[in-house]
Length: 363
Image (cartoon, rainbow, N blue to C red; front, side):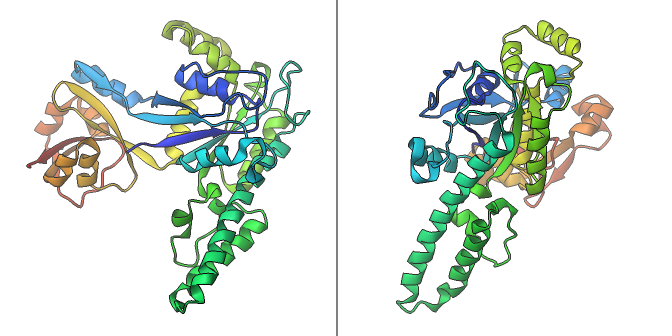
């Protein structure tokens, strides 16, 4: 089970720089459009202070963080929905991800050309969002046409589905993203259609170091538009983050303290992406490895076991659960067991964020 975030935006707004900082993967960065054609892919550990505290107590030979996958998707341009700038290919990459990190340029630099000639975050956001909506409208138009033809064959059960398609087409035609539309017609249309604008979005205002700790009119534009659609925003300086990831942990910490920052902006970005997808973390301590695992909120114990191995799900008997808070409060697994806080749960138990789990199974 992989969880993928696609990094999108106009050309030359810092997408590949931020991707490089996230992954230290060395994606090509160049001052011309469409430098990135095929998406660069990076697997990134999710920062986890809880995992580190558990490791400090039990001192396992091996500690493994959970991860997220990031795709650096080439810059979209106006007309992408009609194929401009290899748009169809890039839109196809967007369909493959679970959520979007929409990078918006919020810095002035005469040495880095802007594809539209001027810096205007609101315009840039509108270009990207409009192209995604236009692509979704085309998807719905094809479905409407197909469903109308099927109705002529006498299949009256399709009336409700056709009404749903037309309803959503009308709302998208007014400029609404699918994620803003309440599904009132009972059909899981969004999941079936894989509409681009149904994906959750985290807006990333890419600023200069000079305005990192303050606010600029550029950032305010991003925040205003994101607020209208209920999407979160974070502010980072891509160039500075790319420099800091090359430092030693000690040098990085000193750098952050000098700037009055608590952590890397990239850590905030990763966590926000994680939360955006509705994911939680649980932990296992079997054998010599302490490991964090990623699952969607609402996952039951057998499915969580299947995240580790399909045999564990098939032969699931029970899960022995201790929550992280009790682990820390009592100082370890054995102490919690002595206090009777290590409990046994069955197939209907829903794993909670921070659970430390031992799965019992038989195959």
